[in-house]
Length: 309
Image 1: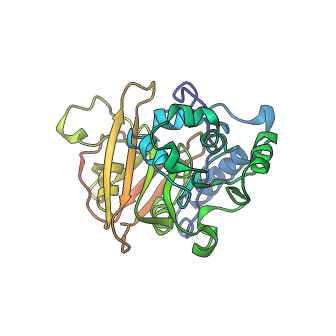
Image 2 (image 1 turned 30 degrees about the vertical axis):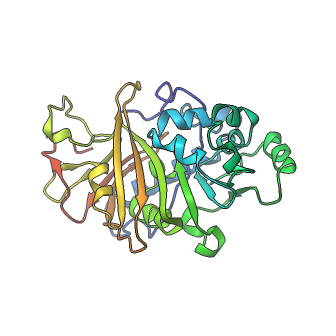
């Protein structure tokens, strides 16, 4: 299991944002062990210097985003104009945001450059403040509020008024990979997304879309896993597609050392309903091991006999 994700991330980096929600069931017998793992995870978020564990990276570049996310991300970002806004969740140092404002980016995306003008406003969000001198230097050169950095609070702790609406939201091995409360996280993302806006994200080591239609040589749990009430596995893609008011595309990137599944979620109306998931297992890591229980039946396949941890 990829408890410490190292070579699986080929370029750059990004910090993870843990989105806490209503809390783990207090009467659950596993609650003390769960709390211990959450405490260990908090230590990872707060780590600095040599104490930062392998796989927990904070300077992922925009090129790394393009490699990890679905192909549509590049065009969506390039099409943003001065009146649009981009939120990057789990931004770490904000390197991807800084890359967006460089002459190099314009040179690589000449089409639409005139329409982009001064480009979109960008908001980098991180659970810890990881900014360095480059961020502050870039902010001084740009117009006021062109780039913002939010830290010290989880996504759920920001009000709708504080965040506003965004045409583009990204999460590259950030909160979507780390949160214990995936349903709440998606509710917050969709609330902040404009109608016809897109959310791009990715997960490592998950039950892939259409896995039930082909042999899957595996009898161990996935790093992030959804289990139906009958014990069958369900894919993250199937869960996303069960959310109302969105259009979803899923892409398996099998060429990576640890295969990842990348997602584009486009919001098509304002009344999105996110099916509930309850976390039943959490083990600290980069990213952590997570198992969720689906409250409604999702498309899946029989669970392996030794899937239980």
